[in-house]
Length: 235
Image (spheres, rainbow, N blue to C red):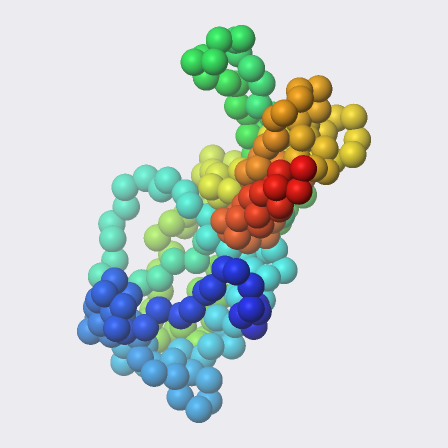
């Protein structure tokens, strides 16, 4: 679906892979994986799960509303069986800052991510939390008899939801843009990745991205590096 002729090859893991095979076998024995039937359902444990619910969540993720958001919940009882649904803003409008604390290179910089500084990001997360609860309450998952463990009562009502989200939000581990490229005076590097005002210096990593990609940054960084190599070699 994503193309197969580029320099970066992606293939599905197979049961023969030493790591993936062990994971798949463990999941099958635990009752979490089984084959998909002709009606588009996967057998999970003793019951069938309608994948329309799952596909709906995937579509929401593609639209930028749902994804995984790592949080640091307090210690809670762990159920014997269950599932988790996380939410994230994959295209945040909030922008943080990185400033030098000292001219000495070993002194850590001042980093302020300014999470949820834009009200729209909080609204998207709040809707994502509501959608996650709707998915968990869907009839297709009723056989699991799910009980919300976290955030549960901590996110009751709009005030509770927003307070929880502000307290739990953290990085999606894809920070970019601290040396963004551009043609405007405020950009750090130009369109050839050259640092403005310093001869012989280029930046070729995630920091030059002008916005957060709605995907893992790995492939994008590789593309930036390949382009930088081409530009340097052509000098």
